[in-house]
Length: 507
Image (cartoon, rainbow, N blue to C red; front, side, top):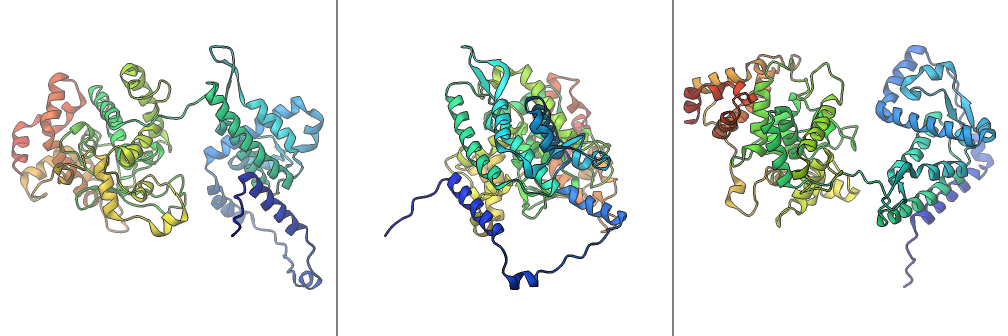
């Protein structure tokens, strides 16, 4: 039996490109030529063109288009200086109509003639960009940018080619495969020598997560506390939490269930799965239910409907809450860098570490980890077609994962603990009074009128569970107020009403 050796990525890409080239160069037979249908030209009406463009603009996010255009402009300016003769042949000026189309060209005035691009010039530019200007190691050696930094310029060219609806030369694609493979190896060598700029986030441990929540509570930053707990529990990107609305949170059997409309890896929203998020009755600092309950109570008058985002004002643009969170995390790091750097490397602490840390905690932070399929589903990661088809979402696996992320230890009896809850509902006068005091603003807001759903009915169960956790952890919350009388917890009504709080503990 003869086993063919595995071909390298470079060789496979070369074979694929050459095979495609041969297919496209093959002349069709006479009978095939006769049967080729003729495309009838048609002048599409302006109104219909606008509708088409509105749909097609969803192919790339505005931020991504802006970044691609910025990189293309940078490449064009460099070529204009270094290779002016070549530039005049391969760069064109955009028409007024194209320049006015900010959704595709942003602020660009020129673009490449992609079918004429010389791959050697592109490689020269990328090799120029690999070194960070005026940055050196202690022994005077130049600092390299990361591989992803130069790879993004190649991505911009691919984007421009697609936007122009023309193919790059086959030799261009073939040469770039080999160049990028070599660049990746070069960066590995630079890392060994300490010459690589590394900005990736270190995964934060559960102990550091608890410490961050403690810092947020001590500083009275209830937004930072609630956002951090939600991001950790969902194992999410900060932008996914930024977009979260009341309509995306519901109450499961014993958990809060969160489900995104879409994600970075699934912009069509075809593979999103519910995430069961649990309370921690033993430590209020990392208890998602308590954090959200306090956050909702303090900001009770902020929202208007179930479609409002939870962490950003309705009028604020997408990403504003995530940006605010990132800025506050940086500020927290500056204030507590000495303690934080006991857990992560200096310069490698950023919000993405929360997502990475949650994944590490769930997969290898215990001797009884959650299944890989459950972790991939919660993180919205696509591993392979096998996982999608055969090892997909199942609620028990996600529930187990949710309890791990809540900080419950799987090898103890407390792992199966039921979240704090009332044995009665709004029919109880004390529970009804507490709900009215804490969440009247939310409960009075309208929901989905077309479906006959009010924000009151859709959020009541969630808020009841949050209120129960607040009552359960009330002694810890009151202790914070005793240490700092001006703390924002002092504005939570039930903490200021000892008789009502005492009654609620009976239910």
